[in-house]
Length: 147
Ligand code: CA2
Image (cartoon, rainbow, N blue to C red; front, side, top):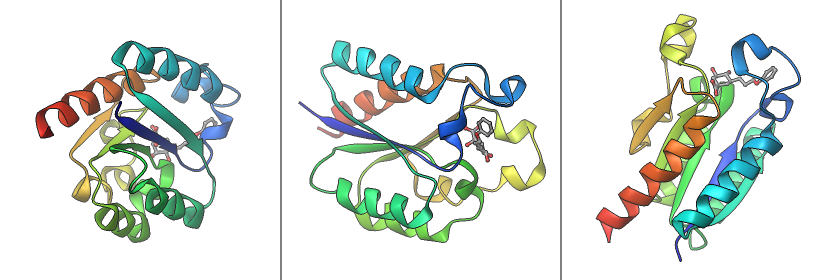
């Protein structure tokens, strides 16, 4: 059974508790529950993690190699700044889908830049919590096509 790491970056632990007008009322725990239920229907094993620390995210990406077939990454604000995360994804050589709850392209110009996009197989943004489900479907299709 393929296994996927869903990795969440800084401040996403606050989801559902603040700024609901931007990020909605769904908590990260709700998203994990949704993802686990959907992964089961797809026959996929799931690890779901969050960290506010760039180095911990780098470690999680390194550790994914050999344990997971792909990574779904909402790197939060590190998306727009982190060469370290970009390099970690390159070195892990695992297909990575970049994910955002909000449509980053409709927001401030600094959010239009992504270091993750340069090394991702694709990007999903703007669909709120549903984006995690879309990303699981997309990753399953990608892994199937890759054989
Ligand atoms: O839309 C996304 O998923 C983002 O990755 C979220 C990041 C933001 O910096 C990216 O540009 C786009 C911010 C996550 C902050 O999450 C919060 C949740 C509730 C309250 C405050 C922050």
